[in-house]
Image (spheres, helix red, strand yellow):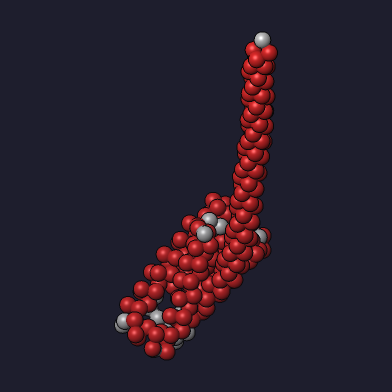
Amino acid sequence: MVWGWTAAGLVDGIDLVGLGKEKEVNIQRKKGKEIMGKKSGYLAMRSEQVTRDLMSSDMKELVVAAKKLAIHAIKLGGFLGFGTSILEWVASFAAIYLLVLDRTHWRTKILTALLIPYIFFSLPSLIFEILRGEVSKWISFIITVLRLFFPSHFPAWLEMPGALLLLIVVAPSLVASTLKYSWVGVAICLIIACYLLQQHIRVSGGFRNSFTRANGILNSAGIIILLIYPVWALIADFV
């Protein structure tokens, strides 16, 4: 009987020890799972934070690049606009210079009448608006009366300036306001300048003569200035 009780007690003890170890193992497994869960949650949060930081950094770089692009565009536009204004004045005076040169012994056989529409479309707005005033209307009226009723007393050198002033005064707003200040007016100036340049080269006897003869150099310089302005203005309009 004593041996039977002892064996039974040993079995129960072994069972209790086994149950205790199994419970301990389960607790450790649960703790391990909890630790792994915490680690995976931390890693997920860390990954999300890194992603947000990268996106924020990319957005900042894009904003900085956009600001730099805008600054460069404004600077380029301002430079091109300023250059256009300067060349507008220079080209207008170059066309007037060619008209004056046409009345001297330095003249060449080019169609100087085309300089009138060129001046019309290239004349700076400040002078253009002044010439469209009431005083210019009276001057144009007097010139027209002299040309019609007193042709023998009308000086030949006044024909081109009179035609220019009359054109400025009577031009409708579609031409004087819309076309003049658009790329169309600039394109007309470019066509006129190209035509005058090729005509000047042809009547001078070739490209070399147009830049070596005394009268050819003066006219070539003026016509090249006429060509530079519309090319620059078109670039400024489309950039």
